[in-house]
Image 1 (tube, rainbow, N blue to C red):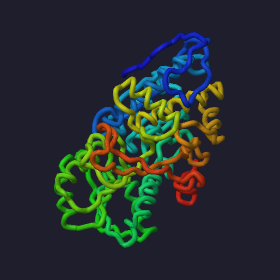
Image 2: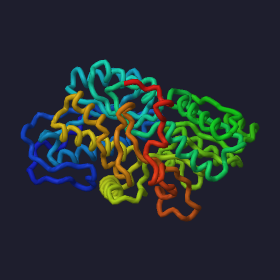
Image 3: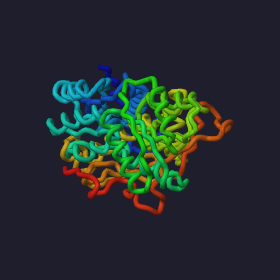
Image 4: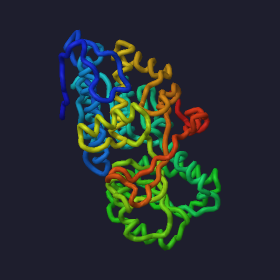
Length: 412
């Protein structure tokens, strides 16, 4: 276990370093007892590269919070560990609460591991801020009152890309073939994609479920060549997306490829010249807001590279949690739940503030489609993605791209 304890005593005049769009007044530590937070994220396996960025964002938020005086005048100490797999994640989460003194649990990217941590949180009646897993089922049939979800769900990812496809007349009467990760996240994403195709007269002619340890996609690419779809859809996750993109480019298949899930770290790893099509994202370092630019500048100065979306989402999640504790003057689970369920708004470095929806605990926020810049337009190896306009549009309610109560079976 790695504990990232930074500073324990600071002067009353201490202020946030770098970006601090989600903030609170600098205060002096009235007591030195630490507020301990249990943090779990995958640092190995097919999601390990995303977890590495998540940890950088978490550490940056921790440092800024402590420099500003901590939470309720007390320093925070984040206990961060590799979640590894669902069983290990649950065991570590229980230990953090039972033995290590964690006040709340935060983190995760794998939907399968997130479910088991959610169960631990509910059993112990402790808060879990589920940051990076996107499966609809987490905030649907598996929802519980002790878990709040920060990342956008699969349905929103599909809607973000779907609006762009509809705009470009790439859905009605088109033949789609999907490649889907064979675990809860992929199954869930495929379900959302099927609903979108059915609602918009798209024709799904084939799907392949792919184990998460597959690295050679040539058998599936040969099936695509035989099927001759109009559009190929990627429902994979982590470094599998990178591997598919590279091999797809090598095969030279003529069918446009789009994705209902992509993280910028995977896009960067694929490299300019390999990625094409339309994809969704929850945030990108080119987002044109003052708060986002300040965060990007501070992160880039610190790490020599721009933040990936998992760095951003961990950063804003820890700021949200610190704000909640400071404004309620409490780490009590029930008081924090009540605070979030009031649909308190948070500056999340986007054009519009976000808030947790009271009935399913989902953070409601903007999403974005992105495409790939024309060859030669990229300023550096992180610059080849072209961010599309925010969804929903400024004149639409934020909730319109999210599942409704009728579509979501969540009962808290």
